[in-house]
Image (cartoon, rainbow, N blue to C red; front, side, top):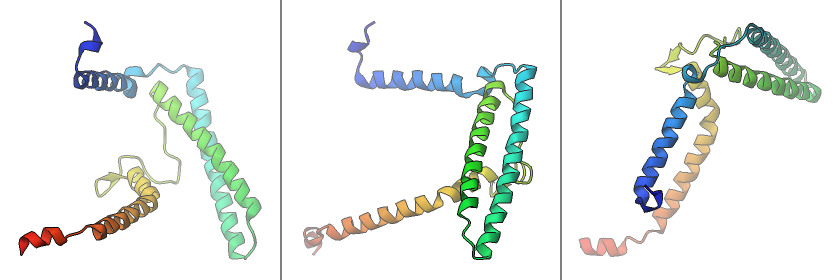
Length: 167
């Protein structure tokens, strides 16, 4: 059967179905998780310790910068160290998440940052609440822009013809 003779809607449906099935197999960790060797598990654990150490360093730098601001000093050097440490932490965290998904390893939370993903606030995980807080400013700006554009659009409408039919 040639696909060129199928209606476009059917081709689109088939594309979505194939894509969905493909993503379903790729997205499930249990279906694609490999068995980690002892060396890989050791590397994973080393990286978890490195991540925890970088997190402690970042907390120390945050406190140092806060003290400097409180003392009315310019913390520019500390801010640069914070950025560098945060970049390192992000890379290690990304690598850990990749290894966790690839080998089905449980990624422990950073000590001192709260509990597990199972703890909820109003039915939402703490991670979800934190993500909503992080994106709330952008969402608020977007909603304000939409509100402004909607008000401009409503103000530009001419209701005279519509209201003339009512009278």
